[in-house]
Image (cartoon, rainbow, N blue to C red):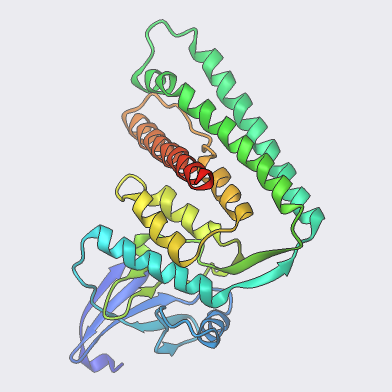
Length: 291
């Protein structure tokens, strides 16, 4: 890239887009970990749907700036789910279960559930004293049954997961993106994953849970989940873990400000949509088992 031919420089947070006479480039700071290990690992597994730098400097990585197709958001999401299932199929391996690690995870999540039950019970008792509740408090009170139902559902799925996984000898591991959302996916001539800096091995459910929690209000998660399950179906214990993680409510603050109320409303709507989706999936699975 010759500086004499630079026509335009655009700053995007810590990144730069540089337009020259013949091309456009996206330049971002190099991460601390060795990205080249991830690139090599993906290519060795036959997975090429990621954006690889054309040049690596001491402090930066340079990528070709590729135009994106003007798809509807649901079309982009479908392509992204196909790429996710391909990534997981290409990088799957089986790891022997270490029961101490399983128990440690189970106990940590059980404590998290207990803490959330106590947190929301304390909020409920605190707000009972309100004679004229604010909009945020009223919104919280109206959705208490949703929160406690989600917590109870999550607890049930966690217990079943623990019972199921302790009977297994091996579990599946895949390369997990950890930031699997629409903004980290380029739907161009060849769909590409972006921002691979947090990639490592983990559970197949991790990226799909993140994706659904991020985009559930703007996408039909039932149809996307169905597409995913046709190409990379979950095992029994993975399905239980997926249901637990998706149902687990975040620790929401109830702030009597406009922004606080909007944030609370959005997160409660996400929780409701995910919870109803899980209930429908349970009904569908039960009907299939009865056939």
